[in-house]
Length: 152
Image 1 (cartoon, rainbow, N blue to C red):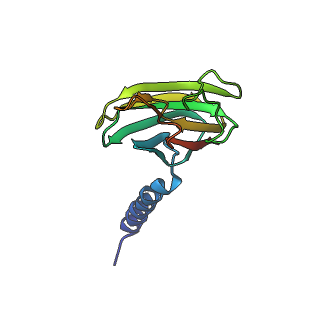
Image 2 (cartoon, helix red, strand yellow; image 1 turned 45 degrees about the vertical axis):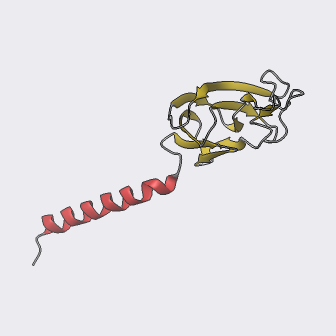
Image 3 (cartoon, rainbow, N blue to C red; image 1 turned 180 degrees about the horizontal axis):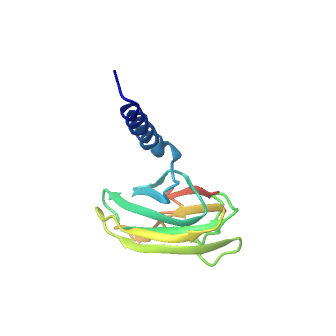
């Protein structure tokens, strides 16, 4: 026969276990977002966060290129940001505001960026403009390095 204190202790342990198991399902509530940069994509997990302090843990998976990570507040879609003649985003362009960025992230590096974000729409991009061996310029944004991000 179990004593009442043992039953209560078991119930408390079970309740704590359920809470611990459910925490990951609340995606983004802890304010951390894993961002992967690679030729030529940007992925954020989760794709949204709660307003306030948000930490982007950014990893450049390459395989070859240096990338950067730019957080832009905008109601424009990820493919609608104003660009220059080379296809790079005009960071001072109309309808958007650069919140912060990490420049020149080497392959394999994993820096973090913590910013205070208001509720709204954002676009996360790499805005590197790189000269190719043949002398042409390659804009990483134009190559697809962009994704939407929402703050609630």
